[in-house]
Image (tube, rainbow, N blue to C red; front, side):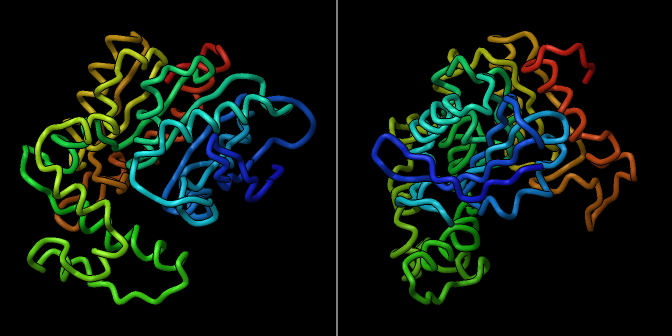
Amino acid sequence: MIIEKNTMIPMRDKVLLATDIYKPDGEGSWPVLIARTPYNKDGHVERDGVADFVKAGYVVAFQDVRGRFASEGDFYPYIYETNDALDTYEWLLKQSWCDGRLGTFGGSYLGGTQTIPAREGHPAVKAMIPEITFDYQFGNCSYQGRAKVMHDLVWTVGSIIPEMARRAGVGVELPTPMEALLELPIASHPSIKQWGTYYHDWLTHSTECEYWDKVSPHTGYDGMTMPALNISGWYDIFVPSTLNNYMEMKKRNKDTRLIMGPWTHMNFSGHFPEISFGEQGSAEAINLIQIKIDWFDRHIKGLNTIY
């Protein structure tokens, strides 16, 4: 496997996004699978099966989204994901090692970096695998059941603000997730006010409006004509979203499929403190990574695989 670290891909506004390119050995051109993350691309390689995809004959492009880790620019959740994804696709398609066929994969936020730009229906994207992800940013994500959920505050404190402060070169005293949940008014800690300004925008936009529609996949299902393998767990926070995505995508492409397991958000083991579903309850037991490879082989390469 050939690895090219931190290839800087230019966006339409000249911001450069850091992308790691994983290629099969030798000369040639291959389909490219893309994943775009706010969580540091360096931490995804083993967990997301990059080596397995490359061994199966794909190039993998793993990118830090705008404003995160090795990429330039300022981070604001979801707002830039459509244009940045489309610009990344166009850059990849111009490379000699890309054969003109693209696919996307990833879970949670990485699911959104697939489905939000998928509204545009880029013709080179032949298949996608969105996992444990949302359909409607307001009603099924930030305000599930029209009541403000707090998992996104925990996400902001635990996953987003530390990197924003690091990039700025300052030390920040962060509350623990529990402290953030108990503090009133909501999100009133100084570090959240300074580094999590988007979160206050989320609090301000407490009803259905265009603000949420701009970053919600459900507003653009008609563009999602590529086959999608939707994956989630019955105990995930986005179960209604996954089911909605599947049903709407299925209307646009009959080959769209759904896998639901005894899993939570990011725990696909089938084992939890309260209950265990046994060894057959894990993603490993069904060889989920091979299912993904077979999915791409069928819908990108045109092979007669069974998944």
